[in-house]
Length: 328
Image (cartoon, rainbow, N blue to C red; front, side, top):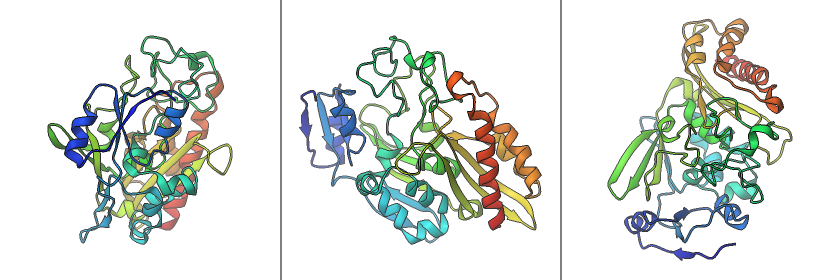
C-alpha cells in the first residue's frame, strides 16, 4: 500500500475543503476503498475520513418520501421495516448485495460511488486500463468479457457498473443531494453517472470535494409494488450478470405507471424508458411483458464473451415483471 496522510476533519465543511485537494479521496465505510488501496489501484496522497460527519438517518416522511442519510448503512436500510414495506425493491437489492459483514460497514453514499469490478481495472498488473491510466487502452476489449457491459460502452471502456441498490434507486427516480465547496445541489440519480466516452476515468459529474449527503426517493404506487431480481454465477457475494429493478402501478389489470432499470449490463445503472413506455397503458399480461422486454436490448453492443447477455436481459426482465405484475 502506498503511503498517504489520513485526514480527520472536524465537520463536513472542513471535509469538503480537504476533499477538494489534488489526489485526495474520501473514505466512509471503506469496504471498497480499502480494497483499492490494498491492491494499489488508487494512490491518494490524502485520505479524508467521513465517519461521524454525515447523517446516517433512515426516514420515511409523513408524505411517504424515503430519505437516506449519506452515511446510512446498507444493512440498516435493508432491515428497516418501513423501507421493506414502502420501497421493497430497495431492501431486496441491498440484501442481494455483497455479504452481511460488508453491508454492516458500507454506506449508501459509498455504495453509489463504488468503482467497477472489471477484472482489468482491479488488476494492478494490467497497464492497459483507461480508467487508471488514461490513453493506455482497454485490455478488456479482447479479453474476458462475461461480466462486462453491453450498454453505454465506448471504444475506450466496457466496464460494468457494480452497484445493485443504484439500479433499484434508478428505477424509482431517486435524487441525490451533494455538498461541495460551492454549496449544495440536487441531482437526479441518472444524472450523477457519466458514460465513459473518451474519458472513462471520469465516472460521475461530482466536482472535486463534493460528497453525497443524502438520497431521496419519491413515493409512488409503483415504488410500493416493486422488486429486484439478480442473476449471477453463484448465490453468495457475486456481482450481477443481469439484474432488473421493476415497479408497476396496476389498476383494473392495466399498467398505469412503470419504473424499470437494469444492472450488470451497463457502464452505469441503466434506466429503461423505452421498456416503461411499452408497458404503460397495456394490460399486465405475459404478452405485454415479452413485448416490452424486446426494447431492453436496443443499442446493445456485445463481444465474444458476453453475446449471451441480450437474451438473458430479456428473460430476466420478463421474469421480474411477472413477479411484480402478479402482486398487483
